[in-house]
Image 1 (cartoon, rainbow, N blue to C red):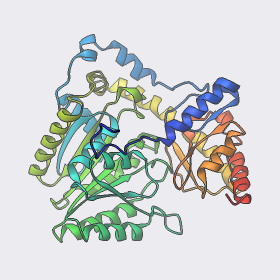
Image 2: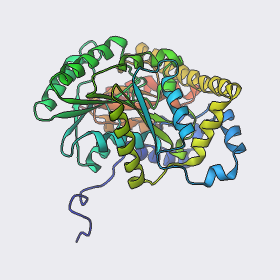
Image 3: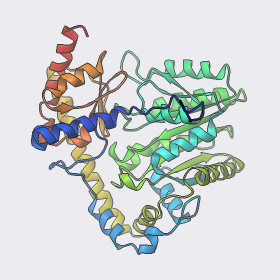
Image 4: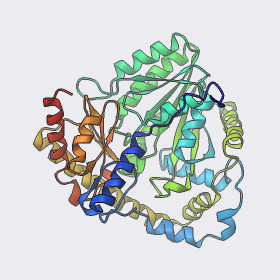
Length: 415
């Protein structure tokens, strides 16, 4: 017996990240937190294993009037918030053209709206083969298909040949294509496209735009503030200036990581186009989706960003604190990378961010082997994700070596 609509009956959520974290928490209850290494969850934990919260963010948030915390926000978002978001997304690298922004429920909401509104039903949406699993869930939810290209070539560089091949394949049967690129600080690998990589991607987009195809590029920048210096990591954004009007560039902005406001679910979808009409349409269709999906967005988090953005002293202090968090995560990742090289563990190119990825044939078996050492990581389709953000420096030492041992055990068993 089933009561769900036919298109929903086969929907069952199996989230590898939260399932791995759940197993980790059970081990903590049995063995104690000091003995367990949590490499599963995508939040920054401090050296004591507690959720890291930026002090300046907390101070400003607690100072807001209650009305700012509980009142409705406009459907598209507070105008001052959207202006602050635009400043945060681009810093000193704002591309030339028309720019629009709509508030969303976190970066996930931004991705949802891009897929819902810029990919035709039953069409393919293109992303890399290493990807955040929610991309596929959102595609399924909105009636789209997820098509992937091999992210790395034989030299472990961005695989522009595979990317181009998949674009060609999709546009043989489609009149438009949404491309999702998560960079810099890619989840789950920590990879980032270079300036030259972006030039190549844009050249492919221009080639098809000249043939009358519509190309939308969504850049998922959820982890950008854990990728390096603010303007250095955003330099590529100027490349989206004055592109053909049938190329639309969008950015998925999130307050979760950069502002340590994970549960407040506040973000934005920001777009750049050479066409004023395209941006006006962008505002309208995404405002419509806001009303349909969640009506409006958390006002308190929006008010926080507005208040912080108005005070240069506050913003300077916030950026220092955020940079300290970035340096802490980077230091942990550096330890893993150094020890991985030393023990011969194969891992994918890491340039920054929360995660490091290890390619493997049987990720689940390897993770189960790690459980014997009370180390918990996330098994993905193509390998294992290690969350440098959640492992203290002391616990990070030795993780690469234990992972290499687990890989060797499973490979020896030929599982």
